[in-house]
Picture (cartoon, rainbow, N blue to C red):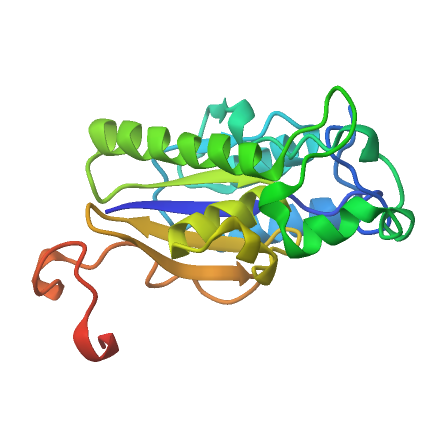
Length: 233
């Protein structure tokens, strides 16, 4: 029952008006640093087997705040490119209001599985989902093997990547992933069992973190992957 905590990076000066993508050297702004400290304080009580991050600065800085606030501090952040942002190609750095006038924008909104971003460095959303989900599967297996099946770990990533991972966990086609939301510095939690994933939280930006770790065996009638009939208590 490995639990994955997905945290989106905090705000940057480009978040919102422009599509940041893989813009080099883009770190958190003052608002983003405050968000990173806040989510770090929320998650500090949870035992984490690992902290993994996208290689981009805004994620690394968010992950560093979380690792430093943990007790005891997590002394190493694992970097996995597969949690990196979608490669938006020629769209990178452009204003969203301008991009909304492009024909591809409607494809991204209605049929994202068919969307491939322009330019030599452009990536398809389906390809981005595939590599992100593959990363989750690999890390789930590694964490379970090294720390036991009830361990939790954290991955700091990006909005579209988190949404794509959630869609997979919910059994949704990628064309439905725009129905999922992931705000800056939000928490999404997914518990993976042999039978199915359980999506515990999505776009959570406040409150306690109780209930994110697996319950004791005595509170699990049936198998680890069984859903409680009636919703549970």
